[in-house]
Amino acid sequence: MISIILPTYNEKDNLRNVVKEIFGIVKRNAEVIVVDDNSPDGTGIIADDLSKKYEIKVVHRPRRLGLTPAIAEGIKIAKGEIIGVIDADMSHPPSLIPQMISLLESDAADIVVGSRYSVGGSVETWSSFRKSVSLLATFLARLLVDAKDPMSGFFFMKKSVVKGVNLKSKGYKALLEVLVKGNYSKVVEIPYTFKGRGVGKSKLNVKEYAKYLMDWFKLAAYKLF
Ligand SMILES: Nc1nc2c(ncn2[C@@H]2O[C@H](COP(=O)(O)OP(=O)(O)OP(=O)(O)O)[C@@H](O)[C@H]2O)c(=O)[nH]1
Ligand SMILES: [Mg+2]
Image: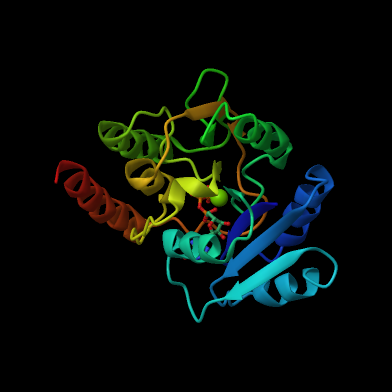
């Protein structure tokens, strides 16, 4: 089975589309796990409604408790031998999922990363400020791990990679923590174009930048000691 984690906070106008696309592309035994942080816009209710039609589990958390903790919660209840994470705002192309799964199933990879910064990858609609922040954060991340896009929010992995691993980051970059702490030997990155979010507002703000720095220091210390 494949478990696909969709973290959501105020994604009411994107959730139906992304779920429909995922189940349109992944034809086999798959579950989607929506982890919603009591979105004020009612995303959680839409998720419950979708779960009547599709193989979806919904985790309702009481309030906005952060992206990596949301993903960690999804991992805890995932039944699949393969676990994927994808944003709910249509920035990541579900069309790549079959290729990501087959790389894992053929043992060519333990972790497959959708990569904006590999040859052929790109970002469509970012301001130069947002680009600079991303590049700086990526530069820091690359000091800890060997990957072109260790900050990607779009990745699939074997469940064994995170078995016994306790994800403790508070902020956005679950993949970085997986790459620092996980059990794996092969990472394959496949290029994609990050698209501007479908509808709705970004949840990335200055607070998230600060959280990233805190998370980064903790991971650096973990690596050193
Ligand atoms: N459950 C949960 N989901 C979150 C949280 N923060 C962000 N998300 C979701 O995580 C995904 C990534 O968040 P975005 O706001 O799109 O961040 P981004 O892609 O860096 O920023 P944009 O370019 O504006 O899309 C989206 O599906 C959000 O709904 C959170 O605290 N809890
Ligand atoms: Mg987004």
